[in-house]
Amino acid sequence: MSAEIEILEPSGRLDVTSASQFRRQVSQISTNKPKFLLIDLKEISFMDSSGLGALVSALKTMRSVDGDMAICSASEQVQMLFELTSMSKIFKIYASRDDFNAKVGAG
Image (cartoon, rainbow, N blue to C red; front, side, top):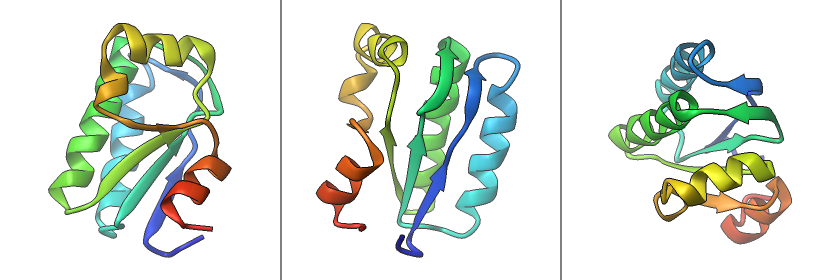
């Protein structure tokens, strides 16, 4: 994987109890100023509006350091949340990490 791409793999639930920890992880990663942050959601079993807010915050954080962010491997529940909130228009979403690598040319 390119040194310019950081990958974050949260697990379990991305909700009100875990969103602040997720934000801290993104903030820590952003200090390295990677060109891209890939959020791999394959281990996320549930996400609520707090989790969605944490992802929006992550996108803003990455843009503030001249980086970008993408999401991959979202479950059906998470994909539905993105569709219902129109966040699928905001985030770059890939079906899998392999799909991301093929499209972005990272692997």
